[in-house]
Length: 295
Image 1 (cartoon, rainbow, N blue to C red):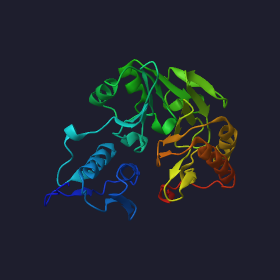
Image 2: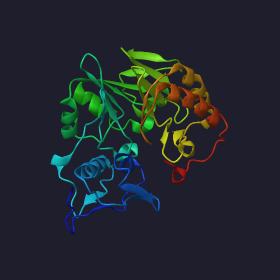
Image 3: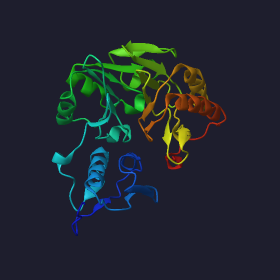
Image 4: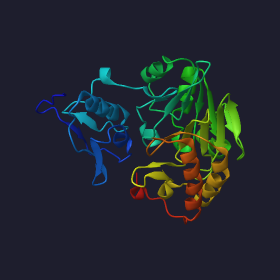
C-alpha cells in the first residue's frame, strides 16, 4: 500500500491547458474540473503513483507537481510500452499543443517515430537506445515542430504530406495525392485531408492506426469522434476522407495525437469507422473554438 506523506501531495498548477494527456495516463486520479485537469484523488498504491509520474512526464506545461517539487528524473517511465511493437514517447511538446507521439518497432529491429515529443538531446538518446530509428512520420503540420531535429539526430528520413509541406519544407520524403502509399513493409500512409490540408493516417500491420488529429476515441461519447471545433482545413473534406478511407483500413489499436487511445476487435473498429464517416458528413463548418473540445 502506498503511503502519502503530509505536505507531499500531487497537484496540477494553473498553467494546464486542458490537453487531456494526464487524464489518459491517470484516468482514476485526474479529471477535468473547471476547464483544466485537476488531481481529484491522491494515489493509494504504487501503481497509481507510477501513473501520476507518467502523467507528469507527459505534461507539456510541466504543470503536475509532487508537493513543491517536479518529479525526479529517475522516475521517468518513457518511452512507455503500450503494445508489443508500440511505445508512447511522453514528454509532449508545447509547440505541438501537447500532442502524443509514438515509436513503432519494425520486424527488422528498426523503429519509426510518429509525430514528435519535445526536443532534447537527452530524450533523443533515450529513444535511440531502443534501436535504430530510420523514419520520422509526421501526421500533419501541427505536430511537425521538432521533426527535423529528431530526424537529423537519428539519421532518419522525415516524411510529411505535400498539403502541409510548409511546416517541414526540408522533409526527405513528400507524400502526394489522396491514394494510400506504402512507405515500408507493413506500413501504409493514408492521406486524410480535413483537420489540415495535409493530414495523414499511418497504418501498421493492419493493427496499429496512428490517426494524428483526424479522429480519436472519445471517453464522453464511448465512440470514435472528430475534433470538429478545431478542424483547420475543412470538415467537408474530412468527411470525404473518412468515407474514402474507412473501407481500406483495418486495425485493432487506435493511437491518436490528441484524445484517448483504444483497443477493440478490428471488426468493431471497421463498423465504427463507417459510422464516423456518416456522422461527420452531417456536421456543418464551424469556427475554430478550443473551448468546445470534448474528450
